[in-house]
Length: 101
Image 1 (cartoon, rainbow, N blue to C red):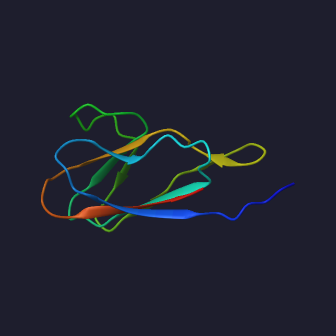
Image 2: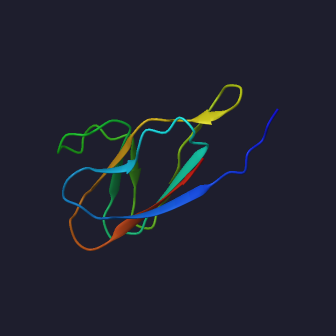
């Protein structure tokens, strides 16, 4: 078995009135974490959302933290698809996303 050194890619994503891509498609993703640094709730979607906030998967409150779930298998993996975010407000703020590959 060949092991490679994991790489972490941190990103800061500004609050937006429209849905934003938090994570792109990445089959090499080992883990990803999202911290909501904004004063508004961040709704997380595992598909591109409409402007509505009714089809969200995860709701991250201000100051909240979320890790993508690890899927069973050999080797274990996390969701490799796109992840989008939409905030409940549009003032200043951001979220911090780190993807480990």
